[in-house]
Every structure is written in structure tokens, then in C-alpha cells.
Amino acid sequence: MPTNIIVTGGCGFIGSNFVHHVVNEHPDVHVTVLDKLTYAGNPDNIAGLPADRVELVVGDICDAELLDRIVPGHDAIVHYAAESHNDNSINDPSPFLKTNVEGTYQLLEACRRHDVRLHHISTDEVYGDLALDDPARFTEETPYHPSSPYSSTKASSDMLVRAWARTFGVRATISNCSNNYGPYQHIEKFIPRQITNIICGIRPKLYGDGKNVRDWIHTEDHSRAVWDILTKGRVGETYLIGADGELDNITVLRAILERMGQPADAFDWVRDRPGHDRRYAIDSTKLRTELGWQPIHTDFAEGLDQTIAWYRDNEDWWRPAKEATEAKYAAKGQ
Ligand code: NAD
Ligand code: TDX
Image (cartoon, rainbow, N blue to C red; front, side):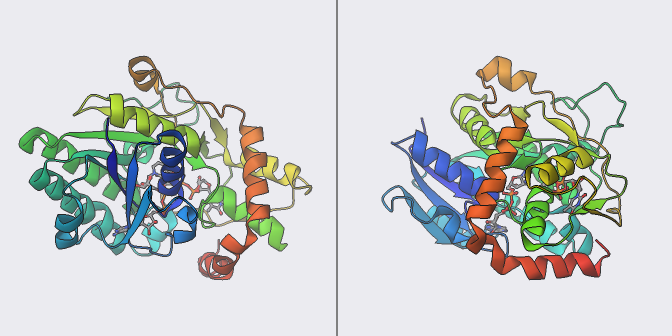
């Protein structure tokens, strides 16, 4: 059982939720968060956690010398750090190449030099997309077919992890998860963008025809799955994480509008995302049968209510980023 772990990207959305999960559920574990604090990283996400359990190191995963200073003495690295937003990757792919590909390479080299276990966090987007009427879902055997600069850099990072595991014996696992929702998600992303738009009196914005399907999972269920893979998963293996939460975007938006007391048509249709993936869907049978994981947050409406309440209660957290985020979208007709 690991007792001293590094969490890269632990000040971002999913990474910080994982740090909270470990602190709450695994009292013997110390966490070193390594985070560059980009626009998406906020130290407030882990503020208030006990100082003897969580240490923040502000730094870049591309910095090999820094990695040589902090990695020795740790049992494992859980690697969340990434540039994570598809729309940003279309505006400027370069930081995605740097952090997602080179950053993962530097972490792999550090794991190799110091013989440290790695769990690499990836996405279902590496598999490309499915047609709306396709009965298939993604499995661990689905061929890679990424569509966007973001997903192609995540696919590249997965390939590096597999190669370093096979060639150099790095003790690595990979998980590919579906769309997360919950507290601390940056307001550039679909669900928090629409919730905070409504709070600000701005009409929500829906891309294309609104029929694109995402497979939603509460971030807490993702954290539990990652812990199970880190502690019980077979080294060298990939596990898909999903909670059977397929919904199209217009259904999610209508649920948000209804729960926030808005008319069903109180939103704007906006320009579609170039290369917009149609549908993602995860078959998580391997994770469930091999490791016994199951999602707990299976009621999406309840999870959405909690998420809406969190954004209402934490306006200080998101308000400073709102104007600039919307200005960036407006410049693109979105
Ligand atoms: P996020 O953008 O909210 O957070 C990313 C974090 O990484 C931030 O704290 C940022 O400061 C940090 N970071 C960025 N570049 C860095 C660098 N060079 N060095 C150190 N830290 C750096 O992202 P998220 O949505 O929480 O996603 C986390 C991970 O989960 C990513 O690897 C992403 O690909 C993956 N993922 C996300 C989803 C989703 O629905 N959001 C789904 C599946 C997988
Ligand atoms: O304003 C919007 N209107 C809209 O219709 C935004 C921001 C998005 N959308 C659509 C695009 C997608 O079909 O909503 C869907 C979800 O969009 P995002 O929140 O940007 O997520 P997505 O592109 O699906 O990628 C997310 O899930 C997989 C994460 O951002 C990735 O990091 C993860 O790998």
C-alpha cells in the first residue's frame, strides 16, 4: 500500500478532488502535490487540508531537475497534470504538446531513474467518437483514433507510458475516464459554464445541434476508481472508468435550466466546435469485475443539484475567471 504519493495537477479539478478523497479516506497516506498553477490550477482547491498530510510544490512536470529533487522517497506518482480543454487546444495546441507529451515523458524518465510506480490519468477521448446509433461502447481493446489536438496529445502520452512500461519496466498503469462533473471544475467546461452563466444572467451556450453525447461520471467515483487501480490494479494494464452516464448535451442543459428555475428555451445555439466528437461511451466491465469498483453517484439529477449548489455557494472561487473566460468564447462566436 503506498503511503507517500505525488499527485501532479493536484490543484486542478479532478486532481484536487482526488487529494480530498485520499485525505478523507486513507489516513496513513501523505500527498505531495506538484502543480504549475496554470490558469486551471488554484491552490484554494486544497487549502484547509492538514499541513502534515498535504504539501504543495509549485513547479512544472517538464522540469527534470525538480523531479530529481522531489520524486525520491515517494512510492507512487498519480499523474493528473495536463492541459485539459479541447477548445483551448484548437486555439493554441502548443502548451498541450509541452505539458501532455513532454511532461509525461519527463515523469516517466523520473520514475525510471528512481524506480517509482506511476498511475497515468487519461481520457476516453483517445478512442475518438462513436455514432449516436452505434451499439458499441469503448473498451480497453478499442483502437486509438483521437480527433482534437488535446486528445491526440493524451493519446501520445498513453503510448509513451505503454512503451516505457514494456521497454524499461516502469511500473505503470493507465486509466481512461469519461466526462467528469462535480465541485472545483473550471468554468470553461460545459456544466459549470452554463451554471455560472445563469447565475450571472448570461444565456447558456449550446454548440452545434446539441445532440453530442457525453458519458458523465461524478468526480468522486473517478477518485475511488483511481485509488483501486493504484492499489489493486495489475501493473502494465489499462482500465476504463465510466458510470453508464450517457446523456446528450441538450438534455444536460435542459436539466440545468429546469433546476435553476429557467424556461427550457432560455439558451443560445452557438457555433459548433471544429472536429466536435459526436459520442463517447465507456464499457467499464474490466474495472468492475477485476477490482470490484462500482459508482456510488448514480443519480445524475442529484449530483447536478449538488454541483449547482456548490457553484452558488462558492462564487468567490469562480467569479474572478468569469469575464475573461466568456470574452475568449465570445471572440470565437461561442
Ligand atoms: P484541469 O485543467 O482542471 O487541471 C489541470 C491541472 O494541471 C491544473 O492544476 C494545472 O495547474 C496543472 N498543470 C498544467 N500544466 C502543468 C505542468 N506543466 N506542470 C504541473 N502542473 C500542471 O484538468 P482536469 O479536468 O482536472 O483533468 C485532470 C486530468 O484528467 C487530465 O490529465 C485530463 O486529461 C484527465 N481527464 C479529464 C476529464 C474531465 O472530464 N475533465 C476526463 C477524463 C480524463
Ligand atoms: O459552452 C459549451 N457548450 C457546449 O455545447 C461548452 C464549453 C461545451 N459544449 C459541449 C461540447 C461537448 O460536446 O459540451 C460537451 C462537453 O464539453 P467540455 O466540457 O468542453 O468537455 P469535452 O470536450 O467533452 O472534454 C471533457 O471530457 C473529457 C474534458 O474537458 C476533457 O479533459 C476530458 O478528457
